[in-house]
Length: 457
Picture (cartoon, rainbow, N blue to C red):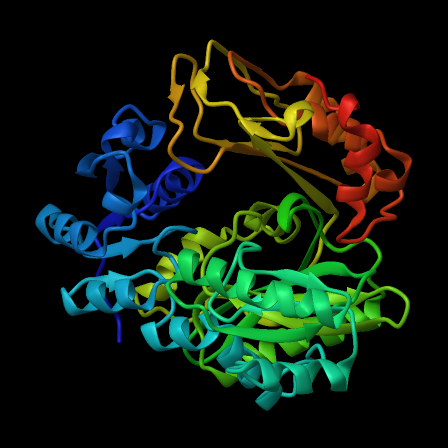
């Protein structure tokens, strides 16, 4: 069923709100930007056709307030709501409230969010679809005794993970039974505080692995993939540097990996943009399903750069009830893209947040360079939210050339007035192991122990 959208309400902030506004404008849509009091002078507010204050600076009272956001969307006269990523993007209750108010939710159905957002039900769906999964519990572990049976079967080390989690929250690694017994209640308490659900499940911990994810897009009937990204350079399980395609992935494994993602998305009749995440074992060439993110991802630009498709624009079209405009045979990899997340943090001071006034700004340019950001000169970065300032993305014909271009673009980027992670990325871009793509999900933690003093601006 086709659903007419003329006005889009953006229920998010920062660089993703700016990204959505630009895509919506290219589709001829009017945009209405939700904002907290702290974001009244944000770039998104300046770019949108209209803006609506939804509450005080605290995210709990503004961007995470389901009732306030939906009421503002209805009062604004919007036809649809785009949740971006983070905040309420993967909140099934929010999607239900949007639809109950008669508005279009730009994303999957509430049922799909609920199923794939819960790690246990997502794991069960993956198993039914024939997608390889990491050895572990078949569902939630409800008692210490049940947990003990699982670890006896799969052996240490193991990961204790929040069933409703995401972004690295509620995860602990145990290497012994004593450590496991101590960490279980900690993981449950953190999961309860972060997600309102203390449920846990257990997986075998694969020490030397790479984080690879597949971008999919579905219209509720058909699904296509846009190949994979590698996100192995992480700090405390938070992604720092992303690439597409995955440099060390053999062609035959790539084919199987991407097909498994399509199989899973088709099995749940997925609608919208989504990402299916995997662990990849370099040694065995095996891959294992981790989770599905039922939203657009922070790192989607690298996929756009290598395939030539605007994913945000396409997910809006799908939400209108349009069928996919491309077939799998229309989507091919061209060249290599890299994204560096530029955060308002000081890498030399244990990544302490560094909000403040942007006194000056020089944005890099030239062929194959893109900077998705929330910045302008004179803007004051508020202290209340995620520290992401923007994403520096480059494309070139191959990975070596893309690395050179990224180093050049990082050298041109100048953000005056606040500490940023630009220095970290400049150091990584010149590191021989990073240049050779010799890394895994633990690499950056080890690297920082030796090289944090090299991360100065």
